[in-house]
Image (cartoon, rainbow, N blue to C red; front, side, top):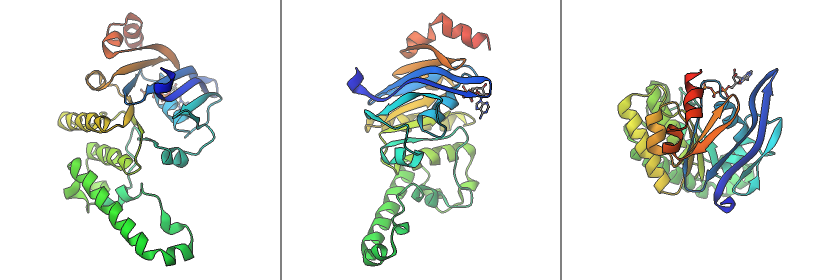
Length: 254
Ligand code: ATP
């Protein structure tokens, strides 16, 4: 079972002042799975995401991604290893075009070294072209290619989420952390987003998904982890979690 885990975090803790936002929590994402992370408001889900992706440092705990410790790596180095995340409110650059937002996720070779750039101009141009083609083909697959040259700021909230997800694909990820992909998104687009997630999963990408929309969790996830008051409450299949009394009580008590 251990060999199958793509992400394995143990004994993670983080306090803000007197608040133990995450308290000795653990979580595992099996390779090839879509794993859910649920819990009442304030349970510590986003803090746990921030710890896993190293946007904030834990007070204690260990994180293995692909069997390697990643706690000392900055988020962009973690992304290079194939581990990338989205945010509760999509982080796209409004004043750049949709296509430019996609291209932001490709490694920036031009910043490297003037002489290398000088000698490799031809190669760079062909890489640029390849990146652009790849970006357009991903945009096409999510139905955003007609908006490639529009400002990202002109997209709806749901489309921005879709763009942020599409952008993660530019980094060839093995694991994508999605923070509430369905929040504030209209039902038609939620269905489309779910279909894309299932499709990308079929192509070999694993997911860890925070979501309050239980229909989304139930239809997407192989396993679900439940957090309450910063710590693990339950873990199981969606059906097991749905019938778990402790979980129901935690939600009713909020
Ligand atoms: P929601 O479902 O409402 O998004 P959540 O499960 O993602 O909630 P967190 O946002 O991780 O929960 O918050 C967990 C606890 O930590 C809350 O009590 C929150 O107020 C607190 N907290 C989170 N970030 C900070 C911070 N930067 N400074 C102080 N307290 C924080």
